[in-house]
Length: 412
Image (tube, rainbow, N blue to C red):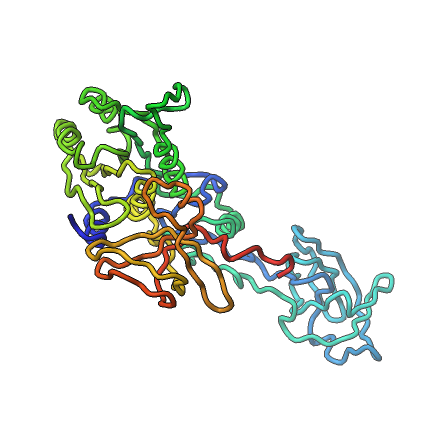
């Protein structure tokens, strides 16, 4: 049996990034860039107007005021997306729209609110500084500049930025295909009759959902019966995936049976137990650098071990640099106890109270009570060397859900 930290280290040290693929912008959402993205041109590509108004030479309006406006001849109108055709000379101005190129000769833009149009001329009612209301070429982005670094995560803002640069495709890391196999004669699927001696294969579906949430692609291998032949056959199918998850079959009673099948496939296992609760019977190994996880059979144990070990591995495979769920500090609102020697991950409910967080357990911590995971905002980390934590002490909570923060007030 090894500590949680040692197990994490052994796993992550063996995890390799996936290969790369080129995707169009919208399909890249949530993916990780496999290369830096450089700007191919300045943005804006020319000096452009920051608002609707008139492009002028600032020297022509130095004395302009509301009481003594300066008249200028309007020589053309420049709309966004249209290049100016005339040079602004002494005593002249061009009507200009937001985003339109500032014509040659002009060095400032007077906003339309400070003007009054009169036929073919305009009255300017305020002075301007050089560059006023003008967005300079390359002010936002300069050609050759690194816009997004390698390992950046593509979000809506990143998609919009690259679209503004004219980039229709990006190179990202591939999503890992994750084979999921549940084991046990007692399990039934939706297409089977649920007899008194059967339970539903909830682990297979919960794991598939966790894989999807972590960015992977689940490959459902179904349910392996408690025979060497069926387990071997289904695991062989999973060898074409990038990572294999086996739910159940790693407890003491099944150890020799499963180990024999894994040995026949050439899968080398590094450990079979971790000093944690829930989730002690956790196995990890590999086949030609393909990670293989043997997860516990109890529903909560399966989900908790996935969060602690499989999710970080999947994120590393996809190029993420932030591998773990966020951890906050909270004030414990009840006394909790355990035997020392194992790290406990206690399902917990979190509440925001003023400038602090408060945390309670969800109640029954049995590894078969799946409703406790539904209620939990996070996992309270109960260190292995402690036997009790008193009410009022500050503890660490690994967040699974942020709904405790409440709903934002519209407009704020």
